[in-house]
Picture 1 (spheres, one colour):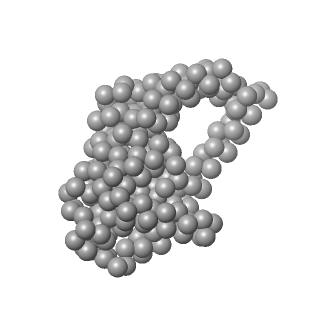
Picture 2 (tube, helix red, strand yellow):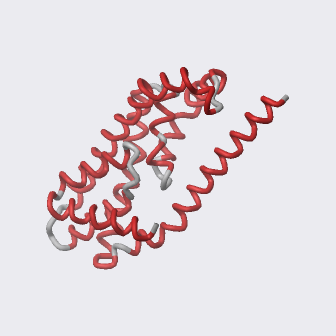
Picture 3 (tube, one colour):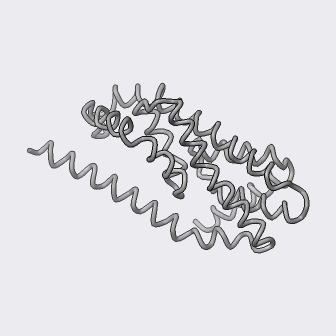
Length: 204
């Protein structure tokens, strides 16, 4: 796992090193589309390049935010026009019923704004929150607004940390590694509880 993470980090470094702001935009777009590319590495390495005078702070932030927003909107549209159709047709085979979709619709209508906003501030979750928002057909304008508001503090924070840490910018990934694992375990636990509840209700 560590070797795989290091491999991804080297690719991220090479892309940003060669393409600058365009690399920041493309990598953040891909990350928010669901690819396991750590955005904290993207932004903190960009912060390191700011220290070296190769990039400008606010341009890095702008391209990072825009990339995240565009990628999130693409993931939302995939969830809405691709994922929902598949789930409606085949969801019963993975224990997702029309009742579950209706519950998700109501939940996102009621709490989706803040779920999207705070989801952008959590590792792992921030990468995938767009898909369920699209599947639940959350209002697109609200989704875009709260995504935009949520990605700004994340992008600024990790760019700033990259600037502050300078040559030690890779410490950010080391510090967040355990928190990433915690969020992943939490998601797996929720999936297990979801399956257990459905199997229990089916048996009844």
